Image 1 (cartoon, rainbow, N blue to C red):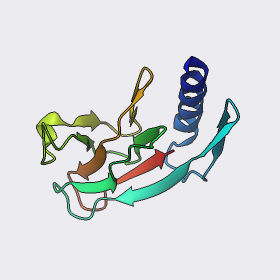
Image 2 (cartoon, rainbow, N blue to C red; image 1 turned 30 degrees about the vertical axis):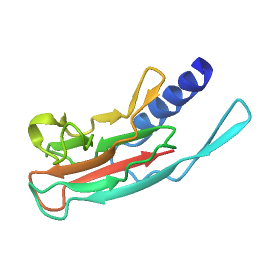
Image 3 (cartoon, helix red, strand yellow; image 1 turned 60 degrees about the vertical axis):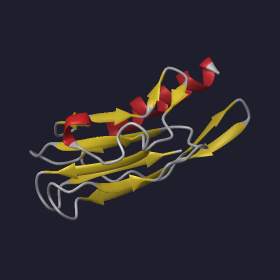
Image 4 (cartoon, rainbow, N blue to C red; image 1 turned 90 degrees about the vertical axis):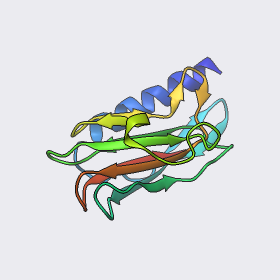
Length: 131
């Protein structure tokens, strides 16, 4: 399991370095004989200040990464646990400055939560990668 996590973190670090304001093609990662396809999507905030879901809850998620691709605006990333915080709020969100990213792994644990984002302005952007 450690080798898998190390490989995933290496992949996410490499992707993070290459994401600087450019679209990311889908990639595959092979870990211990299993292949996990990465899906990358560019997301624009539909209404500034209003959270929108970018990844649904998934018990089979192997990893994910969200990067703020704005030149100057902050975005908020909310990991939704419907039991403790059923409604996305900025106060319980990860704040990302331009160029910053966050992944959904903590050690060997991968968050299966629904993931929501918002920005201050309509058309604020992020790249979301999931496996």
